[in-house]
Amino acid sequence: MTATATTERSGASAETAVQVVGGFFDAYRARDVEAMVDLCDDNAGFDYIPFEAWGRQRVVRGEGKVRGVGKAIWDSLIDAFPNLTNAVTSMVADDNGNVAVEVHIGGTQAKPFAAVANSGKPYWLPHLFVLHVNEEGLIDNNRAYWDNADWYQQLDWMEVG
Image 1 (cartoon, rainbow, N blue to C red):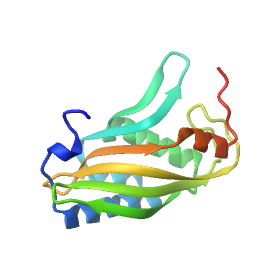
Image 2: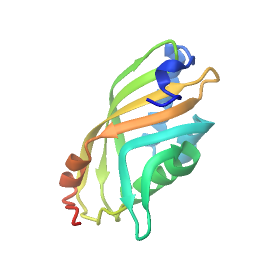
Image 3: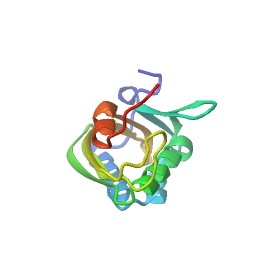
Image 4: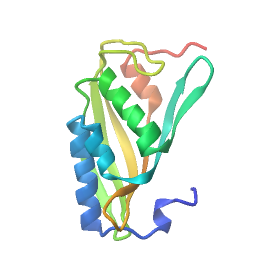
């Protein structure tokens, strides 16, 4: 874990953290990226562990800041999957602002996304989010994990090297 690991910082109460993170996923379900970003600290970290997009001259990874790479990924996902939605299945928080969330995310592809060609197919995929809500009631770290192989299979996308 990095120096900004969620377990090493103080933060919001469990009740506040659950409300903030619940609001974040409500905004995500509404496909309101601005509202998602507004629930995050100006310097919030972003780390979507399995995310990688290969371009002609560089590889973009899902690591950086919410207001940079995070916002760009969310905007692109919603553009490619215009009916993108989520269902929170479990949320656990502590009184240091740490929140673990199991959420299923899915939608039907309407446009290419990163290197994934448009298949017109739907996906529904479990994700694990580990977030931290600071003492000001803002998300200051957003980390997510999911099974890329399953996602690619659901979209009928096979990587060719």
